[in-house]
Amino acid sequence: MTALLSFRDVWVEYGDKIVLERVNLSVEAGAFVSIVGPSGAGKSTFLRLVLGQEAPTRGVIDLDGAPLRAEPGRDRGVVFQRYSVFPHLNAVENVLFGLECEGAALTGRLWGPKRRTARERAVAMLEAVGLGAALDVFPAQLSGGMQQRLAIAQALIMRPRVLLLDEPFGALDPGVRLDMHGLITDLWREHSLTILMVTHDIKEAFKLGDRVLALDKRRHDPHAPHRYGSTAVYDFPLENKARG
Ligand SMILES: Nc1ncnc2c1ncn2[C@@H]1O[C@H](COP(=O)(O)OP(=O)(O)OP(=O)(O)O)[C@@H](O)[C@H]1O
Ligand SMILES: [Mg+2]
Image (cartoon, rainbow, N blue to C red; front, side, top):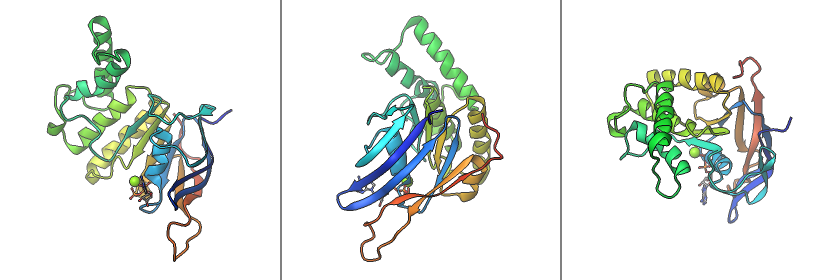
């Protein structure tokens, strides 16, 4: 079986500053990979590579056996720690947005039966994330946890091959965070998602992931901190997780 995602000797450098070096790994479809590492280790950079927002300086990244195109595509959805929803659109409009861009590239609007079908899908997705009672509500009126539910719905409506989460629960209160853990685990299992999630919380990493990847530097040069980049220093499979 070919891996869904594979990194072969991937490097990211900014001038003479090396952020990632020699990253080699592959991710199977259906995996839930938690990514941990110190601040500045390159975790967000790693996700940006998968998102296609950034290209490696060296090395190759394959998605579904073909070189990943360095542009955001609908096959990859992303949720950030905050502010990834549109403040001027209500919940349904936020989720519809991607479908409208895809279905009506010129006008950004769907009409008639196409719009009805798209709206039904958006409403079903909002119900799946627990926002069925907040369809017409604008983000400013939603709590932090509800905004993250909306951001997840917005990403999932495009049926991405990979869902990328960059500290999605980091700004939430502990109780809300616990609810979100339940939600993301259910969505992962029910929709057979492939998830890459960055977190600062090691307990969260082990609780949610079926694999934990640690990015860090193997070598340090005290006189030149940017001389060496981070790589996958640990990669733990957690066998006891039920796959979606
Ligand atoms: N465009 C850029 N130009 C120069 N350096 C950059 C650029 N983007 C990121 N970096 C550097 O790359 C390193 C890794 O950044 P990144 O944001 O990926 O770290 P991170 O692991 O996500 O950190 P955090 O846990 O704080 O979010 C940092 O030293 C950062 O300053
Ligand atoms: Mg980051």
